[in-house]
Length: 135
Ligand SMILES: [Fe+2]
Image 1 (tube, rainbow, N blue to C red):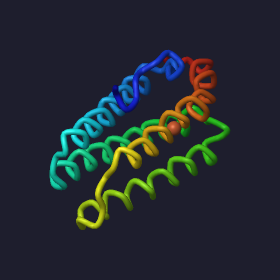
Image 2 (cartoon, rainbow, N blue to C red):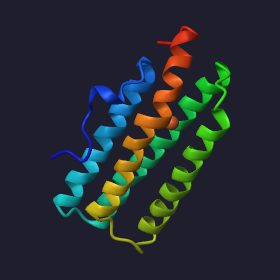
Image 3 (tube, rainbow, N blue to C red):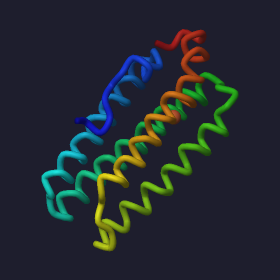
């Protein structure tokens, strides 16, 4: 079973963001597969790097849109991204230092956070962007 599967409830109706969310899910699923296949620390750390880089690029895309379209909840949203960013960077560092074994539980925590964030906070900007003509 995939770690996280695309469903309609995740759609925010902005093509670029929906596409990025799908890519993000794919990276989570790659990582889950690698854990199940008991890939080594170096291989796992590489996928984590990819996942973290992509997540940060994705957050930056959202925040750029929020700025450009004067989204009123930009600061609160950015704060949520920041909280996740700190956790992700810490995890990345600990994996690089070989201090940490990534488990399915940790992966689930991260994918649940992302899913919850998309369904709650990301859904809230959908209407604002669409009304401003962004699709
Ligand atoms: Fe977001």
